[in-house]
Image (tube, rainbow, N blue to C red; front, side, top):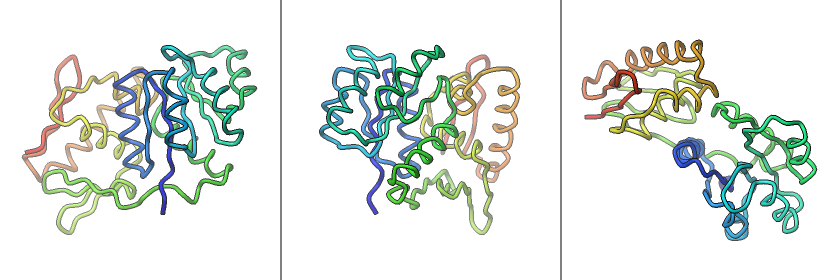
Length: 230
């Protein structure tokens, strides 16, 4: 079955990388561009099923890109990412043919739900996710679409955020990942309540992975975490 193709235009490199890889593990095919001036050219090349456009971009903003896309294709769904909250900006986006929007910072859970809803109502739902994505983490196997971590005959069902957190750690293994980046990506906010939730999820993941001492989630005091395998 063909994968859903997403044109993703985002100039924040770290955020873009994490979102791209997270969506890819969900079975989507991502075509990413950081330069707004090159977005329409990529649209013509990849012919996406849906577009995810940041509004604040270099060389050409998301509104201009959407306007040009609409002259090429009147029906392809467009989801705006915006740090703006003014009503007039949101109205402008809808008038240009936008189907939905998310305010930054956003959580991956919200993004995925909104993408699935748009695809459902625009008839592209049947194309979606490849269910064969599997990651090996030491002696564990992480079945991403099922959100299951398994080793030998044991299976641990993960919650959505546990699974997303494990993916972010794995995608950035061996690197130091900033705690605030994790909070903004998975919860959409780095407030105190979400920060305590992150502590709980890190503790849970350490518990799930404790049978393999070669797999470690190190706390880098005052910064964040480092995920080591072997």
